[in-house]
Length: 129
Image 1 (cartoon, rainbow, N blue to C red):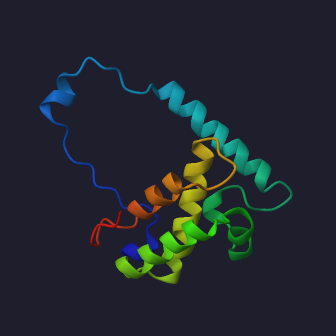
Image 2 (spheres, one colour):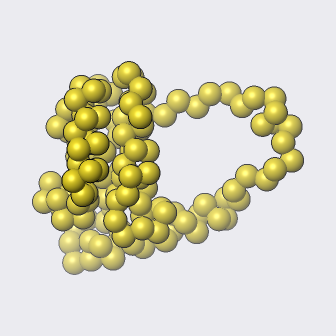
């Protein structure tokens, strides 16, 4: 069942130091701007198609828009094997990595994007780093 859910996130309680911190977090307005920019990137990417978001990409579109270099492909293969993930999870990891890269304003999926996407698939598995 978890294989069909794109993001697996554990949200532990904040510690007392975090609650007492005077350090401001990122504002909702800033986050909204970043999300809107990522959505615009996706709309431009899929212009002329019925697709409007990375989550709806077909396998062919994943190959076209989620290309990763050899070292990242090796890292993803290692994660797939170590976490015993399915082929469905492979595509979902790439879609999530593409979205994370879009949120960062990046044209290509980089190692931090892929690692974060893998992390979101590992909640019910042995940890992969």
